[in-house]
Image (cartoon, rainbow, N blue to C red; front, side, top):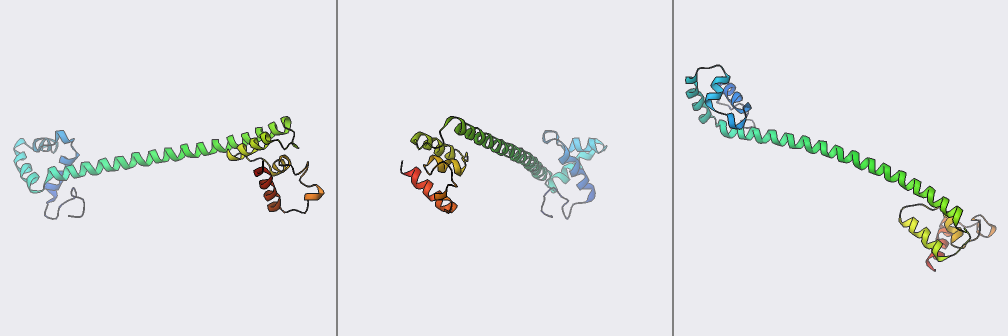
Length: 178
């Protein structure tokens, strides 16, 4: 045998294998020597030959093996389709998340620009910016630095020679000390 029990067995004749193929394509509850004889257009007496072949070549078990294999193929196909749908949903969610974050950033900046004194060092303003950052909303560093009390503009003379790392460190120390 070559690995799959429903394939032709080494000592099985082409005629008996053809009869077996008719047997295993029938629905499990309809499988019988009589049904195979009928499907093959043979007289009812031919079922005796078919019963001998069925026993000798283990048709019942081989048909069950084939059924199990077909169910596995169907399950694998369904799983692959479900996986593809899940991946498409996740991609759509990620895209929507990106759009949401972009819009939240726009709204946060508009809110900050129109309702908050950007030169305020109020703990409430700092807490709002920290909350926005934790939520994944990027508040521009210039606004964070201004709120942290580093002056009205980042590029003021006293800060123009600072590197981004130094400005970020100063921002963290200012916001952490509140």
